[in-house]
Length: 378
Image (cartoon, rainbow, N blue to C red; front, top):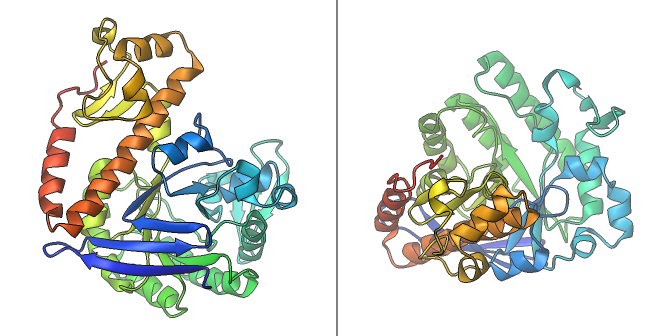
């Protein structure tokens, strides 16, 4: 059995939206899909059983954080990431590249890799293409990422060109280092910033290797959304139709809908759980701030159109009370709701592609979400 197969089921008639299915050694993943982020082998504030119940098919874990703590060898000794965190579904691990490069002046880039200081104890650490793959092989995720160099925005073209070229060289080293091809699918990452010619060059380099899937990196790093969509419009068609396409680090409803419309299959973001920890809920009528005093005596559901565990059992008044009292349960209940919101949104997107009405869903869903009914509600 291949580590990953991808079946393209249907393409929308009016956009590039695609309906597909990934199959990994841990089951099927219907696409387009949103992947909850479990940075340190845990989706923040939510039990794995709750993540299963809300319908998530695949989650993401973070190589950089698990490399530093508890260490990939310990996870391997525990039987791999699936057993360690009690998750039976599919797992994707990133390479650690984005986290390392976000350290700015605290890291040093060479052709060998990146030297940096641990945020835990200040010790000097090194991640190279070979080390990143070694760590991910030990973690045992179903889908693993190549180690890449992610340029910030804005950045001058000369640096982006150098980083993109290095990403291509590092990818070949990742392919050589990968020792678990029958169980773990290695994705290459397209870089190139906002420069069309660099994106095309990067796509050519990674597609040449005929990998199981391809990621689009270096976006959602500070550029205007209009620019991100412009870049996606150019670069998604450069990736093969018969392989999954993954847009890294994107999770707002508008960006997901636009990404799907342009032909993206996979998305991830920390947004739903991060918003929850700040008292914000993603609802069918827009972003709701539970801190709003108007919810103090509101005993209605968080979202009348939602049937998640939180909405079935708790009122806005209770959730506001939990948040104001700084009770941890607030983060748990709001995270369950926000994750459920995005998972169900993806289900509606998949159904709409099958029924040739994706453009109608996109217009109606985003119109309701950004209508401002709840606004920021401070």
